[in-house]
Length: 317
Image 1: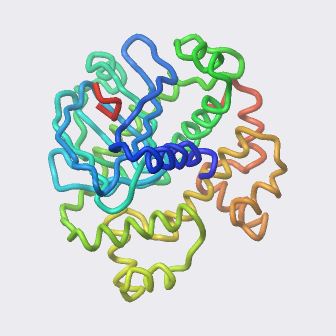
Image 2: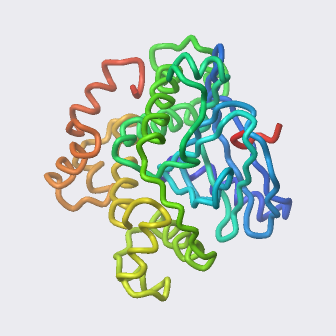
């Protein structure tokens, strides 16, 4: 996702120049009574030692770019773009970048009593992460479009939009936060948990494959050859660690990119399709409708008639 990843790349480049240790910095996008949305950019890498932290609120973070390993009450999971990180208040956790540097997340944080009014239960998640699922794709795309809109505006406009009161073109963050909380608790309760603990070598191979797919298309055989595995074993390893197949991961990423383009600029649908890696507009329309429930043109029309894309350490605590 070029628009989303560019600021992460800038931060990583600045870190390489200064030689300073990696760190996480957060920028508040919006906040209200009992909730907050933060854009978190982390520049930590394999040379930075991870340390234990504690969630200060109910936390649902969507990975927008990069990857990292997250561990709380179970073995570490690899978090990739489109994944959800789920945190319960006072829960200890650790994030690490053993195999690649940097990540960017949109963190939705809720006071426990406010969260309980949304889902009618205490903020407890049955899983510590959700993979990039189709059921959450429309919400993820709306969050990414909102992030692209926020970070593309002048600083004064961004500051003015941090309260719960929004203008005609501000992303409706409060509505999105409520929907994401409800969806996350529903999916976390229904997901089939896989307690398999993959070896570090497998996580390293999949991490590199994820970073490759973020930058450019690659076939299953190319990814498998790079990982020095057979296509069959690579497919099994990738799917077990990320929760989706390489094809699903790449397709979902391209469709999110297209959704952000449709929400944030006026490019023609055919240009968005080609720029997102689709060689045929009819295939793009079918894939987009399957992912988001509407055609690309209808998706854009809905957005233009609403207010926006319906849409400590500053990490995800």
